[in-house]
Length: 280
Image 1 (cartoon, rainbow, N blue to C red):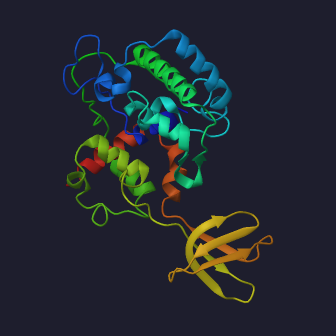
Image 2 (tube, one colour):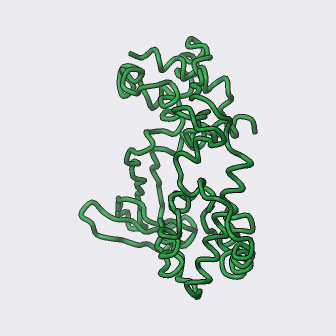
Image 3 (cartoon, one colour):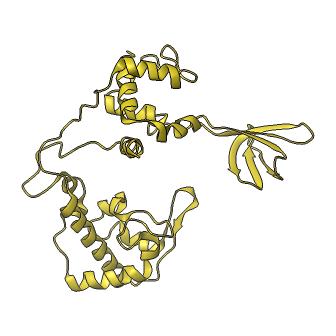
C-alpha cells in the first residue's frame, strides 16, 4: 500500500510548491493562480438556495462534497474550468447547454433558470473557497524536493533484473538522464512508461479465426463476447467470441508498466531514478 500511494503521488506530478514568488499576506499560491479562490464570501441566502438546488440537480454526478458522485461526474474542486471561473462566465454555459467529455462521457443541459443556475454557481464558489482556506499550502517560496536519495548501483541491478528485457541503457534509454530535465520529471516518466503529454502507443490485437485467417489491427473494444479492431487501411472489423474462439492475442506496450506499479517499493523507485540520472 505504501508503494501504491507513492506511485499515485509521482504519477500526478505532485511537488511541494508553496509559491514561485512570495504571496501577499493571507493569500496562498493557489489563490494567485485561480481567480475563483480570491472571491469574498457570498450572500448566505443565495448560497443556501444554491446548495439546495445542487443537491437536487447535481449531487448524483458530482457528489455531496463536489468530489465526484456515483454517476461518474468529475471532481469540481479540481476542475480547471471551475477554478478559472470568476462570476459564472465559465460554469453558466455548461449548466445551461451541457458539455461533452472525454471517452464519450457528457453532461446534459440542466433544467434550471438563470437565477437558479447562478445560485448553484455561488454555492460551488463558496465550497471551493472554504476548501482552499482549510487546505491551502503554507506561505513562502517554492521548495524543491531532492528526490535523488537512491543508490544508483542498486538501481542498475534492479534495472538489469526487471527492465532490461524491454529497455536498454545503450538503446532507447541512451542519454535519458540528459534528455529529460530534472530528476522528478525523469522519475515520473519512467514509472508512467512515457512522458505525460506523449502519444500513448496503440494497443494492437491479433484475431486468429477457426479457418486460420489472422487479422491484425488497433484494438477498439474487447470483452467476453466481442472484439473490435481497426486495420491498417482504416477498415473496422468485429468478431463474435465464443469461449476461446477465435483466438485473441493482445499486445499492449504499456501493460508491464501497469503491472509493475503495485510491486514497486519506495526504495526501488528511488534507486532506479538515481541510476537513470547517470545515463548521460
